[in-house]
Length: 236
Image (cartoon, rainbow, N blue to C red):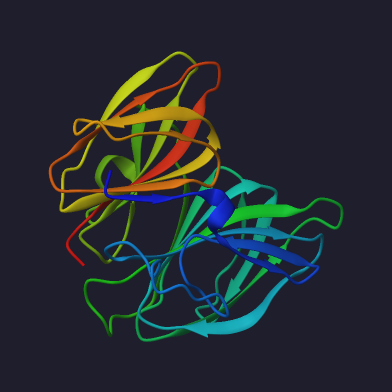
């Protein structure tokens, strides 16, 4: 297995209202061994206190994906968009030439939990864009964000694809790398992973595994179901 990122070794931030775990170097957390994977630059697991959030800030030339696992995000941006993004919805912002936005927890009672994902764009200097959708799980591996919007997925400005993998307990699945490399991030549950070379891991929430080349991961669940995000990625 080319790359293993245990959840317990991620960078951590605790600001009281925000508790965050960084799979890759971000803000004040820096580790030269973990700067991203291919064009995947950020996976932050954020927990935001009730009625709190990120004040207006700016982004440029980045594909920003929000994957909400609990609660809902109140989103406002400089393009005039104002939406709630509930658990189960996918949000994609193509920052392009630049946009400002804020993100707040809609609830005054419950914490908000979501993954914030950044992917480097294929082209820079494009007009900013916003997309949001609820994508039902079809196959075990369902496309969420792709370069061409296939099968009802949202679109990103990169030759990459993001899928949701959902396996029931006592299931098995062969996950193939279609592009230059792939990265699996576990959202919930657990599974055993094995590569043809013989490398094997047991993965749990927050763990990440990267593989390169035309490889396959054999994924087997036992007593737990598995929800994971699979990134099919180009060369960096």
